[in-house]
Length: 166
Figure 1: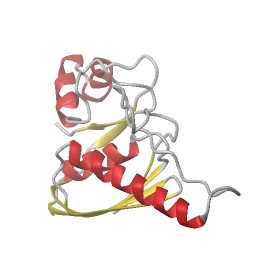
Figure 2: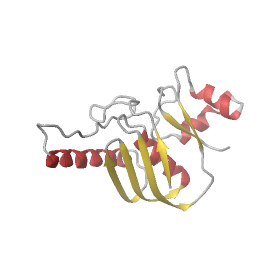
Figure 3: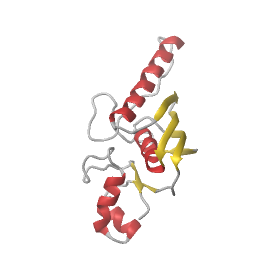
């Protein structure tokens, strides 16, 4: 179990997706919005977050997602540490989400990967050089972040990436 922090404003909107991560706005109750309406909105956003996991084909058994302000808590079970880390990244790289509290059970535990927050000017080659001493190992990072990454040249500042152990 772990608590992972993300940049709240990194990513794109959940509806009308772009190449960046989706965005989920946090429900706010104001004078024109009832508590019941806010709860309906929260449940809709939780379903959208579940949809992110489902659309990426990440195999989570008994998946449950809870949303409280900008914090997502995810429950369920996965086969590998890599799948767990991908679930955390998929949810955390949604704009509007600041924290992911993962409570996933892993059937086949393995050493955890390292993580890297992309900064302006980063490329997968540059990150591979930093972590592995060899820029040509960038495909390892790309593969470790599939299916969230579709193209090795499409990363963005604020995005959190898995850096697998070699």
